Length: 387
Image 1 (tube, helix red, strand yellow):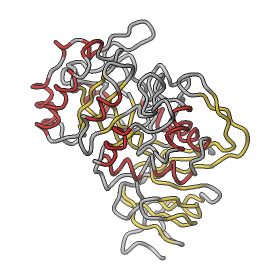
Image 2: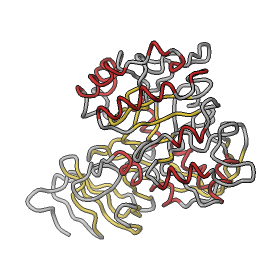
Image 3: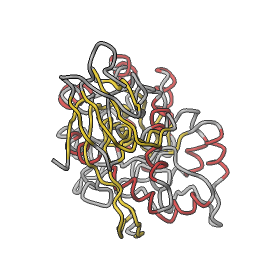
Image 4: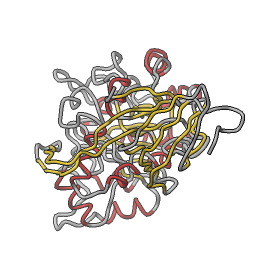
C-alpha cells in the first residue's frame, strides 16, 4: 500500500509478527499510525517524507496491553506505584486503577496523577470515602471494616462528574478488608453501581464472606478479581472441581479476573481451574508497592506465568487486550483495528528456563518468558529497550 490517502502516516512499524486476537491476525504485517490512531494493518505500507519508520522484524507486535487491576495513585496512597514507569516496563498502555481512591479523594487522583499521565488511566471508584488508605508494610487497615466510611451519596456525585474516567465501582470484601461485616459493604457498593449504571469489581480475601456467597450476588458485567486465590476461599471444591456457583456466575455473564497481587494468586488453584477448562477472562497484575519487587514484578511476568501453566502466547495476549476491552466496553482499546487507539506493544518471547513464584511462595518453571522491546503510545514511539 502507498501513502494513506492524502496524509502520510506519522509512524509505520514494519515487518513485525502481528498478534491481534480481536481481528484474528497472527501473521507478519506492517502497521501505520496517524493522529494518535491506527490507520492500517497490511502486508506492506509505504509512508511519506514525514513518516517515522521503525523496523520491528523479529518481534511480536500486539495491541497495547491493558492491565485491569493496578494501583497507581502514587503519592496519594501508600500502595500506589508510578504508572508511567510501570507501564513502560510492561508495555501497558491502559492502566485500570481499582479503588485506590474513593469519593473523598478522587479529585486529587484525577488532577495530580490521571490528567498529567501520558499513559491512559481509567478507574473503579471505591465505595469507601478515602479508598484504600491504610495499606502498607506498617499499617494495614481494612477500609471496608469501618462502615462509617461507606459513602454512597458522594460516590454517585463523583461518578457523574467523572464519567470519562470512572468505569465502575470497587468494593473489597473479606476478613482483612471488611472484618466481621461480611457482605454488608457490598450492599452499599451495589446500590451505587445500580444508581449510576456501572459494573462492580469485587475483591475477595479470606472469609467471611465465602467465595460462593460473593459470586452468587454478582450481576452480568461485574468482575470478581483475585479469582484464582489460594485456600481458604477458593473457587475449587476439595475434590478438585469448579464450584457450581462459580460456573453459574460465568454463565450469566460475570467476569473472572486474576488480580495476582501480594496474596491473591495460587498456581495450585490455577492448575485445577485450567484442568476443568475454566480460564480467566482477564489476566491482571494487581501491582502495588508491596508486590512490585515480587512476587508480581509487572504485567509481563504475570502473563508469562500463565504461559508456564500451558497457555499460548496468543491466549495470554488476548486476556490482556481483547477480553479486557470487552469487560470495559471500550472497543477503541485492546485491538489494532483502523480507528482504534494508536497503542502497540513490541514484544519478544525468550526461550530458556524461567522460575516463577505465586503469592503463596510456590514455584513453577516455564520454558518461555515475554520481554518488552518497545511501546507505541497514542501513535508515538514511546519507549524502546533496544535503543
